[in-house]
Image (cartoon, rainbow, N blue to C red; front, side, top):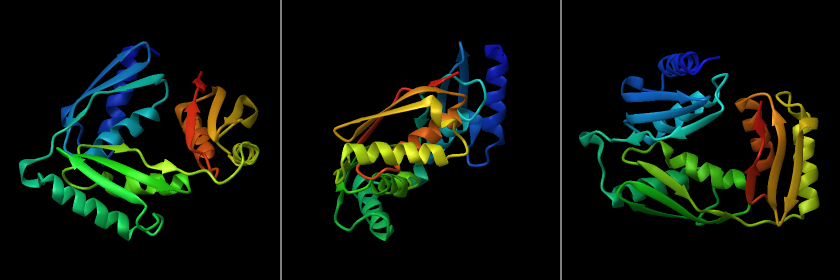
Length: 215
């Protein structure tokens, strides 16, 4: 597939996704690597654009350069964004009370604190993604491990075997200091994402280095 054909596929995928206003999104492709530029109205749209492109067949990599430009009517002060973020996190039953702190600077949200599970860290970030005024998120919440490396490796390998999306024998898992490294080759970006999600699903994982090659 040529770069021009891939670019057309990406443009069609963005136009087809109802959660994205693609009017001001630019797309360039070189050797299968897609560069997204321009601007959107929310951080959620920026993430949705990247997620959509990841699932286009033929994409080998993504350079994300989209900016978030909030409409003047929806612009909020940093203290308002922080208050809303804390409130929505408090309402999320999957995030433990009092474990997450929020700071905001010029619309950029930083999450800090510590939790026991990765899904709790992820839930806190997901909770604030769609808030008005947010232009980006730095998730520095730490996952405090409570299990041994051997248990983590076994659980991840079991999860890979259960996944219908993956050829588990093509993915190698190594664990050191509760940090997981994935090596091997997968057939698509969606398989790569499934393997990474399987790694993060194991209790005690604090970091995942995804070195899987799509090919």
